[in-house]
Length: 342
Image (tube, rainbow, N blue to C red; front, top):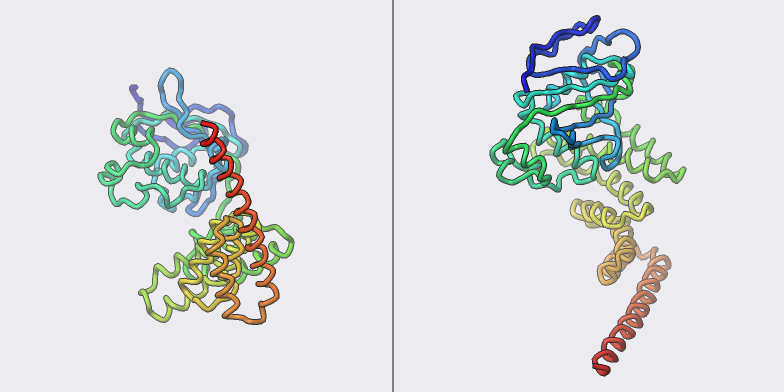
């Protein structure tokens, strides 16, 4: 495709430059915002090929969590052409941008991250741990169409729908956009908000608050020298948030996440009764009965006053084992009967 030099639209005030062509599908409202650094833009996006079928690669309305995208202007978003395009749009505008491959060097790894997040696969793909484009290409991104794009780049079309544009000071900052002082200050607020939501049985929302706090602490820890007093202090602050997060996941029926986060707590402090008790209950739900029994036994050793509660939990395990033995016996009888018949 031949891309002409971009021309500013009437009243738009921004030229997109060579290799980017804009087409307005639905005009926006009001004046073009200033888009000063720190402006938050919330939008839906769709990425399509320029082939005859207009193959859709991503659509935030249908992908995974089906959530809109947030971008902070001036925070060095890796796919710079998106920020350039969005800065030409008004509130409620819908527009498509046909973009030459010369602007899409970072498209594939960015798309991988967005897909992983939408599909709850963050941190699981091999490519996310590689350094450099060459290594990423070798390891693969976990999506065949993105791997193919890395090998054979091509122009793409991005369709954006602006949902809101908020200037700095008009919205609460996300944890990742805060400085260290702001992250420390928000921790008790997030804990209080999470606890209130938990008491209201809003377990999913409570877990989000605890997860946000853990994200702040994770970032703060990275700035400290391992095993320094500051590092240890921050690392220990994770424990109550991990325990609360695990409890939410337990009540939401996400048992493997509960096990994972309780195990993280035990690695940091193996004297915490709550971690063993909650992990034991999650193990029971997953039919890891031997592991559950070990956790309840350890909890009893640490806190003898739990004897009554643990007795009930151990009886549940005994009943489940008896049930499993009966089911296994029936299965073996059926197998033996079939062997006899043949």
